[in-house]
Amino acid sequence: MGTPSETLAAVGGAHPPAHPPSPARAFWRAFAANRGALIAFTVFAAVVLAALLAPWLAPHDPVQQFRDQLLTPPLWQAGGLPTFPLGTDELGRCLLSRLLFGARVSLAIGAASVLLALVPGVLLGLAAAFHPRWISPLVMRLMDVLLALPGLLLAIGVITILGPGLINTVIAIAVGALPGYVRLVRGSALAEMAREYVTASRVAGAGTLRLMFDTVLPNCLAPLIVNATLSFSSAILETAALGFLGLGVQPPLPEWGSMLSAARDYIERAPWVVTMPGLTILVTVLAINLMGDGLRDALDPKLRSA
View 1 (cartoon, rainbow, N blue to C red):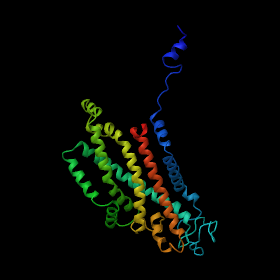
View 2 (tube, rainbow, N blue to C red; view 1 turned 60 degrees about the horizontal axis):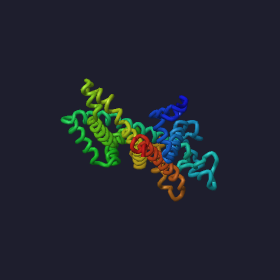
View 3 (cartoon, rainbow, N blue to C red; view 1 turned 45 degrees about the horizontal axis):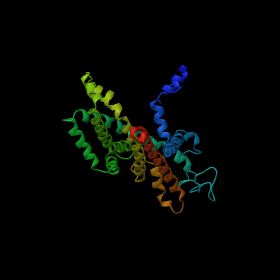
View 4 (cartoon, one colour; view 1 turned 180 degrees about the horizontal axis):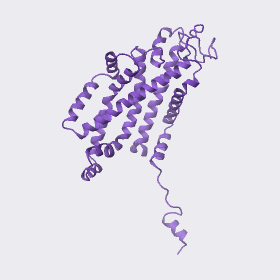
C-alpha cells in the first residue's frame, strides 16, 4: 500500500481541483479572446476619454474664429500650422477642438437616447409579456405602427413636430429605438417565463413585480446589453444624419453631422474639412459595432464554449 500522497495522486492528482473562474473573469477572458473587439474597446475608450478631457486637450475654444486662418490645411500638408494640427474650417475654427467637443455632444446624445428608450422599453416589454390579454395587444400594435416607419424618417417626423435642438434630437432618436427594446424584452421574457425556475418562484408565492424584476429581467440582460451597444452606434449615426440635414444640434454648438453639412461646399477646395469629421464618425461607429459583436460572443454561453 502506497503513501497517502501516492494514493491521492492515483485517485485524482496531487493538487485539489481548481475553482472555476468567477463570471466576471470568465466574461473578460471570452471578450479579450476576440482581438477585434478588444482593439475596438481600446479605440472607444480613447474616444470617450478624449471627449471627457476636451476642455484640457482642445488647443482652442471650439467656437472661436480666426479670420486670418480660414481653411488652413492640416499640419502635415503644405501651409499647415502647429497651432491647428488638423487645420481650420471655413470660418477659421480649429477642427481638432471642434471634433473633441463634438465627441461630447454626439456621445451624450447617443447615451441619453439609449437610456430614454431602454427604460420604457423594458417596462412596456415586461408588462406585455406578463399581461398577454389586454396590455400586450395594445403595446405591440403601437410598436408595429412605429416600426412601419424607418428610424431616421420617424426621427425627422418627431423633429418636425418638436423643432430642432439638442433635447428634441434625443427624444426623436429614442422614439425610433423604442420598438426594438419592447419586442426584445417581451420575447426574452416570454421565453424565460416558460422555464421551471419561474414556475417554482410563482408557486412559492412570488408576486408579479418580483417575478418581473427579480426573476425574469436579470436573465434578459445579456441580449439587452448587446442591443443597447448596437443602438448606441445607430444613435450616433442618426444624430450625425439629423445634424447634416440641419434638423439636429444647431450651430454654433459643435456636432459631427453639422460639421459635415457646413463643409460639403468645400469638399474639393479643402477636403480635410469633410474628411476629419467623416473619419471620426466612421471610426467611432465601427469601434462600437465591433465591441457589440464581442459582447454578444462573450455573453452567449453557446458561443463562449464554441
